[in-house]
Length: 259
Image (cartoon, rainbow, N blue to C red; front, side, top):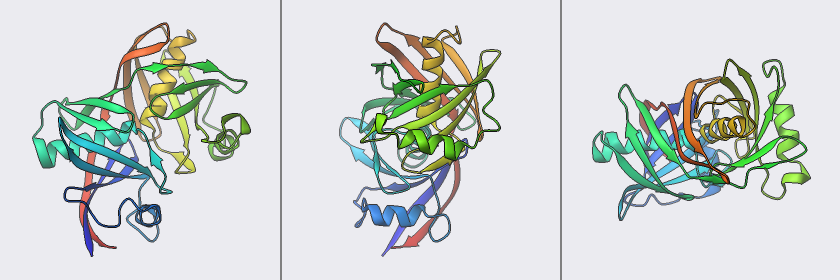
């Protein structure tokens, strides 16, 4: 059978989006998802997103990493899924959607810029390696003076598989700060590689920087290898609330694939 898909990217973090209403047979089979995300033999992507109709919300988002494993949330993916839903299902107005980590909102700010809400953060903790922050998925934030010359795959893989973060593992963000602007590189579990951008990682990095006094603004501008993002939030005693991630969500192409 053939499936219809849309390819999207958000600051270089790319996704296969499939409207799963009616249900597409065979998905979410991890082997099939891994094959579709393969960059040589499939469509190629960092992850796959199913968009479904969901009572009380404009849509339901199911996110899967490139290795077929499920993710509770994906910040860049959520922006892309929201743009897809606006374009294909609802029109370009404010909407609300459900992900595995709970409800979220999305706004279209024009020029394909999408703002999505991120669930409140609590339980931020220091580890011997850095700052652990869960923004829907677990992230480790490591601050450094220069993250440009680092072998990010080697650095991230060692921490991702560390016994300290077993059994689920952790995403790893290496962050440097210049004039209150963050520069973030991320190794993502499930992709098992450095990605050009990670929305939940950028969010975790901004909150960790504010919590440790490295920035004093409630809104952070962030550079990633795939472009520019911004995060705004309110610090709380437990962590952060009123968190919003803003950046581009770009339609790349659509097509059909035999499965």
